[in-house]
Length: 352
Image (cartoon, rainbow, N blue to C red):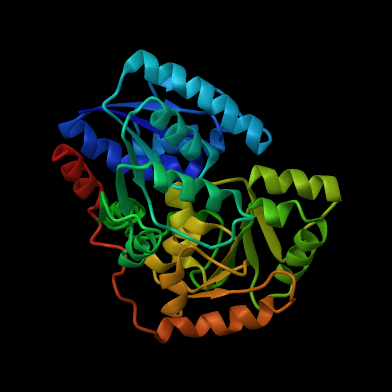
């Protein structure tokens, strides 16, 4: 089978690493990089670090308003698909690149495979929620990370083509952890395991709300441990616009590679984030997480007590972090597969 894989954002590069390796043993795959994330620290570093093949097509769309960005991607992807005539298009997650790829394929009557299908926050004000819902309803293969994701699709009337394969991010995490005997990145930063809080913020609902962003930064400065804060370019830009200066208790870092981020997550006392992926990666390595949102698409982590939702406008981050620390005594079942989601996806696609 000839497969066009569409990526564009940092989380998709990581997910593509194990899947592309597995696909290319059986299928003919080519990568289309939309350029949604284009900064070296947000794009090229992941291709180098994770051994992802160079994209055969780089569209260079860049950032922009949702409609303009998605429209530009849709037009550019369509041209490639018409030229290359793949048998299937594979998309990941819930970004504008995901939606544009699925729409372009569907309009050309090319079957769509969606990796990380079935996630729902049930908050339609999130662009990611709109992207994932539409993509699922356009897809012929829906590869879900968990049984709950498959059940959510069933409740929407989607049962055909649904496969519970586990989470491809677990594939990546498991492989990296095999090769980490120590945590050298922590040594580089002179951090002690369990001696800091790891924080990330990047979602539009966080960064575009001036009061919310300033409130969260102020709350982070009052936690029981120093905070390590890899700063997303969007967040860095908003902090400059608002004149936010970080206190000494918060150490800002540029975006880091996946292995480095995994080491930071593994070594943290608690993770504080508004990211979807980091909630799950914290669960993989048994680090308690506080999610600065009122809902999450990774509901299993909340139900098991390893992830706590914290309303960013209520001012209770300190108590949320304190409660999260007790999670380490809870059971920690394997809810996202066995670390071979890429293999399962490849086999299912081979069967048609």
